[in-house]
Length: 235
Image (cartoon, rainbow, N blue to C red; front, side, top):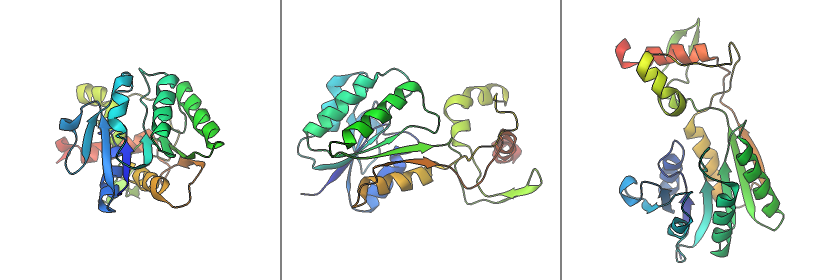
């Protein structure tokens, strides 16, 4: 029987990129999303899944799917740790023994509880990996020759044109930060997907938390300069 992998957060920054790599490697992919089947592109199997509605958990865990690994992307809000524990418990009942969970380098308290729970069940033989990336900063095949006096190859802005900063950027061409001149190792979701696929499919389980940073430390001014240079209004 062929194996399958289940990806929660199915239409987010990382899950569809993980799905593409798994499919290319010949694996079946079940994409669990609040949007359901209609929100998931072919060739993946899309299922309705909502962390706040435990009646949907079985949708993501068909008993005949021979699920080899599960990618856990729990949202920052609107769930409890018990939601995640109950889903993991159901997955284990259905034969899943490998879990890859993405949190963050500085996760909220309930994510820390989820991390602790995954490490605890690891003592029972469960295979696990926790991914703790910095903020996303997508990369394109583009080289900017001069951004604040130096060249940058990591250009585009996944966390800035989407999610938290998108509303203020769209409304006023600005975003606010408390970091001042602090630098961050912003990372591409493509790189996170690379590591997640390895964690899901490697013969030897990782059983570790990976802290994931990009190749260059950048300030928010660097991000802003790159964003404006790539903005449609600049062409």
